[in-house]
Length: 188
Image (cartoon, rainbow, N blue to C red):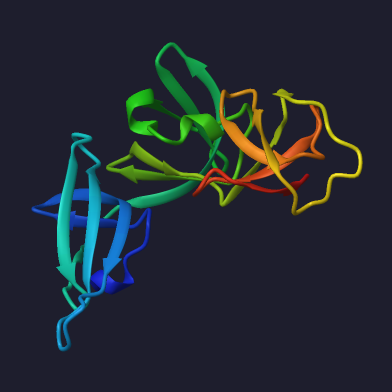
């Protein structure tokens, strides 16, 4: 059983008999002495997709949910369904675009390193890898002599994601992007 202070994004807990995944987590330290830290958590119901906000004290215990995690890769889009393939037994799972809110911009054909959450054999959510590599589709021309810590410029990726990159990055170069905050990490 995880404590509220041990929760992290992507964890699955059981609330009122239904599995919920942690989407956002915020720790608030009170200003008065003796008060305990509060954890504001936004959950997504894995069955209905509804959002739920809860507040917990750090030592509150939560019930871990019974779900299976499998490694998958993104295969293709079939209408409104995004199809993922299990890398172990090659079975396929479909997930609608609404369930992938905030993650669609990082999905490229053949992206692996994705962890799927399965409840009773059905895919309900995915965890993206920590970073992805994408080519820069469109950006202003690179500036010779620009340093790594200088100003940034917007770059558009093939999925429509816009990332602030250093001025020396040119169109067609591949870059590494952090999937948790959408920021440029390095050249690939």
